[in-house]
Length: 191
Image (cartoon, rainbow, N blue to C red):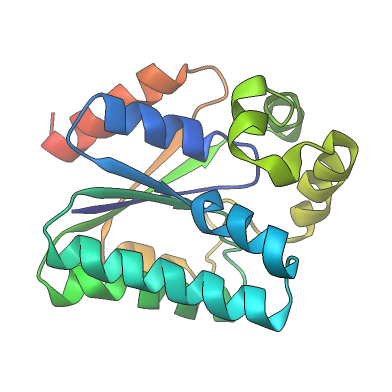
């Protein structure tokens, strides 16, 4: 199974993904596992960075699907961007083609909560590129220009894809990562 956890920056995707892995047989593949090493070599958004980041992610997802690995994959997904929608469709394809289940979990929390989380030691330890917290806070705010969360009554480009798979939205602003993970795992089990 592929469990895709998405949401705006600093909502807790990696931390919740790690808690899911700690409470189950899932393994965590968070987006910065490919970003951080490439940043040191090429810089964010450069052609070599973009090509390799995409290729590394695809190969990991292909091998995980082929080896029947239950994987949590986390990333920021602007729901109003058609190009990002196509990327997500490509990323889940190895699991879909292999006949394995794909489930999506959206995490949501208000901007002030996310700005607090942006500065946590746990986040900064795993994401060297976020250690300039002034820049990182600005990035969290800047990405607010995109639609980063589903809203009842407002359709985004992403929702046709979400409608074809299991989908759960959790406001985790008042939940611990362990409690959020427990809710996700209970939902996956159908309890």
